[in-house]
Amino acid sequence: APLRHVRLQRSHQSCRRGPHLAPRMGKKSTMAACLLAEFLGSFFLIFTVGMNVLVKDAVWGGISIGSVLMVSVYALGGISGANFNPAVTFALALVEFIGGPVKGFLFKKLFMYWGAQVAGGIAGGFCYRAVFDHGIQLGPQDVKFGAADVGILEIIYTFMLCFVVLNVAVAQENQPNQYFGIAIGGVIFAGAYGAGAVCGGCFNPAVALGLDISHFSHFNPKWSPLYALCQLIGGALAAGVFRFVRSSNFTDAKEEPTESVMFLSEFLGTYFLVLTVGLNVLAKSPAAGYSIASSLMSMIYALSSVSGAHFNPAVTLAVLLSGRAPDMTLKRAAGYVGAQLTAGKLASMTYVFVYSDQSTSSTSLGPGGHYGLVAVGVVEVAFTFLLCFIVLSVAVSPRTMSTSKYGFCIGACVTVGGNAGGPISGGAFNPAVALGLAATGPFEHIIVMILTYWGFQFVGGALAVLMFRVTHAADVDNGDYDLTKADIEVNEPLKPVV
Image (tube, rainbow, N blue to C red):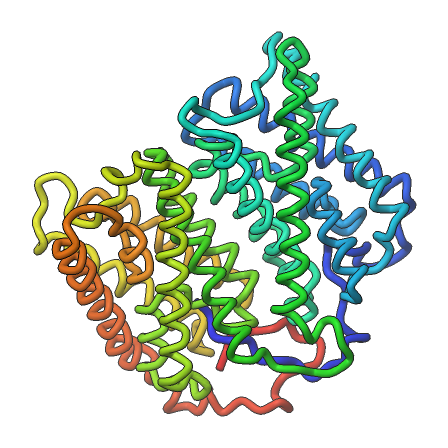
């Protein structure tokens, strides 16, 4: 996705604190206002979860839940920080404890926020119970899943949620911005369908406790403590990785990300993308395209200022061939591709473990239905072209780039291609995704399919570069790329340009 942001020449002290840390202007909110904000946000989150589950809205349920989180974050981020999740509050407290750009969460505020969030969750649970006269059983969503499957996915997606929060709402390189709410809500869109089919998709101790306690007639003390523990572990891991990825936020030195940090960034984003693809495929999700697109969007917003957030070898090839990214050397591009392919394979190992033997017939790579390789080629070339062309247009070209909607635009390409071409080719449009989906069949067949798909996808990326050079030739002709530090105002929002 977008190339690394131009870094503004301003000290850490002058950076505006993110929306999850403190009110953004004017008088500081009282603790009573903060606690009420946390209660309300948690209440409506759990109430919306319960209502969607009990009306059995398989298509729009996850979008509804993610949307209530998104709008609540925008509404209350400037009051309490809009945590609405004990794991998020825990991650923020840990970042403060290890010297990060967070203030005031140790220790009294941590426990007071936890109390407000859990109280809101329990109140939301009893409120939807009053509507339906019964609750929701917390635990694995099918008898074929066990505690290990539930625990792994709750850790992974709570990590993703907390990590995105830390990067879009705390990381100084990304402040100020207007995409924090949609990036955070996008994690719920991503995890509600694929992971939700296994563990229920809580990713929040207040949700787990609210669901479990309100279902008092069948309360099982085993599950809510397990969920809460795994979610807190996810939050702690997110704080630790954030410390490594954003090391400049923990010191007074102005440091550019090292190549090892960039490679880790590419690994993380690609891992969550491919894992979300596989889990949606295995769950036969009715909203796979939107769920997968949301995982890409959220991780783009989180990590674009670290590595450029390509998460796709075809995108890396397009950026390299475009000639408009002087820091994207052949050596660095090779490192990006290696990290992306490694992440794709590890993600496939994760969902194969969760689904055990059932994954062997559900994630094979190849044409769908009665379609052949010609149809696959047309679809993969066309929609990989679209994805790479949009990346170059909204994140590279200074003439057409978007400073706040670039992640949404790039993620939307996956929704477009996944719904239009998914039944034909599987909707990979990414060599790392193709590698992850190629889980079964004779070895020779797998290799042939992988290389075939890779060929189509790299052709699509190369064609995007050719067209981009024509449509956006005026960028270079008019000298739009000759940016200097003096051209950038100190208070101007960060822009994804070269």
